[in-house]
Image 1 (spheres, rainbow, N blue to C red):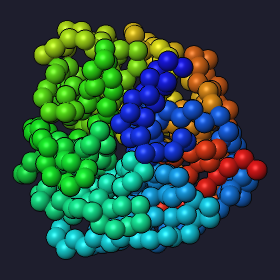
Image 2 (image 1 turned 45 degrees about the horizontal axis):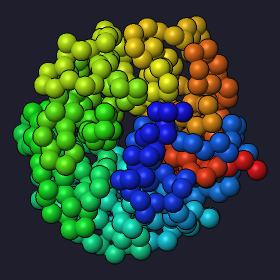
Image 3 (image 1 turned 120 degrees about the vertical axis):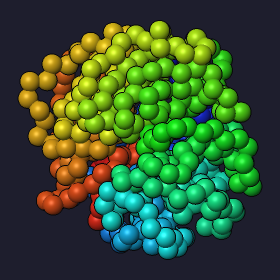
Image 4 (image 1 turned 120 degrees about the horizontal axis):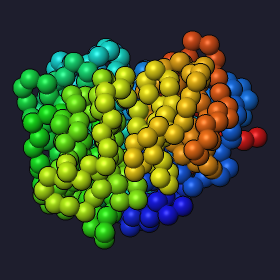
Length: 408
């Protein structure tokens, strides 16, 4: 597929130390949940197609990343007093090393166990991680601390934080915040070698979505969503290239991109919209469509060819026409999977999304609605995470366990 191929080509340029098949960042190598893996299983359970299952000491909402034979995952203990980066063996899930960061001050959160919302990112030589108010850290692949930034301020919002760091060339970029009443909301670019600031870009409002790097008409752009604008920035300098109005108050989902079109989706009672790229300044006039308020979107969708796919928090799946916003799927009965905060993964012409109860719904990626599988784990399973896919294996994080799922 042209969209996936071009996105993968961009990522190879930006992070050339990685292995083929790695899942090195939040939402994988493209930043949009796309995978070219054709060997991952369609069905599993708590015992079927489970290579291994290891317990986790503390809850966390972050998604694991994979580089070679290593898995990296964040967690935090009760009330976030200790925030940790874990490195586990891909072979059997055993802990290889763990780095702890102490944080004694108070930080707001929706839940006292949810101080591990940001996923790490790696280029195969180093791992960069955000511990929110506790700072931004960089470690080598064996756990040696290379640098840290503990001068990024206290992030205070009743819903906590969620944006993950991304890598671009020789830099690491992180949206710092959100801050609801006091404090800064800003995009920070630092040298991934030293941690020193390259540029900063301030915003009035915060965001939980992770920025996305795309290439449009030969130019790299960083897509950033904050109320009320979706913006395009030059990732080398932080200079604003364009902006498009359409967001409401809560921006949880990451921006989407495909076929020259950018898509923004707001959360609670929020709008969704799409615009054609190519303009400068305010491109709201180039908006293709604007959906009225929906229920709630926390997880991010995917763009495949000329369609947008997403599952809302209430479990209702949607397929929209990319160019018109028209509803393509007519889902008469909600899948029996409960609610979700999970972001969608596209692989092998299928759409995978992890639900809050640990089930994974699998849909056919196409304009005809088809639910292919509902994969349930043990009763009383809970998760707010998303799936990671690498070389025929799915890594699934719940509040209590990390699973490696593969076709046996």
